[in-house]
Image 1 (cartoon, helix red, strand yellow):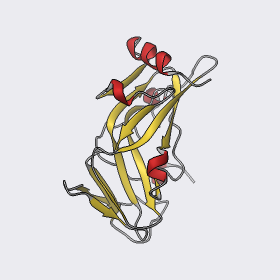
Image 2 (cartoon, rainbow, N blue to C red):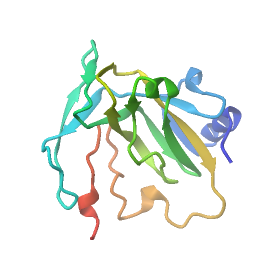
Image 3 (cartoon, rainbow, N blue to C red):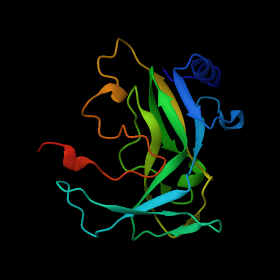
Length: 178
């Protein structure tokens, strides 16, 4: 079941959902709008290796915006820090962003119960498009879970994305055993 606006507010008051900064005008009927943070990243190397630590370089989006191009893959970050202690959060792109040909995630649209961080965005575009820090980029939808949770994400020793960062985080695939 998806939480409504009133339920999201209720769960924020109970401390089960945290959104910082929180702006009531960003609360939709059954979602909360999140915004593009000021930092983007690109990988240093053209060829990435799933078994290696692929390094990134970060840069800030200038006030006049930054043009994303189809030939590049970008990592972005939400301006908002979120915590989810009793729900499964889903991040979906806003339709206005999709209509500009921007995809904000390749595969990682679902968070885990216990995810406490900024969301790293996996950004690709269909044609060149100028983006701006602070622009609405996605919406968080919260699903109720059924049953007790054995392994909260923020308590797992092998969770790869627990370090709180307000900048994009590169793939940690290399930490997996395969």
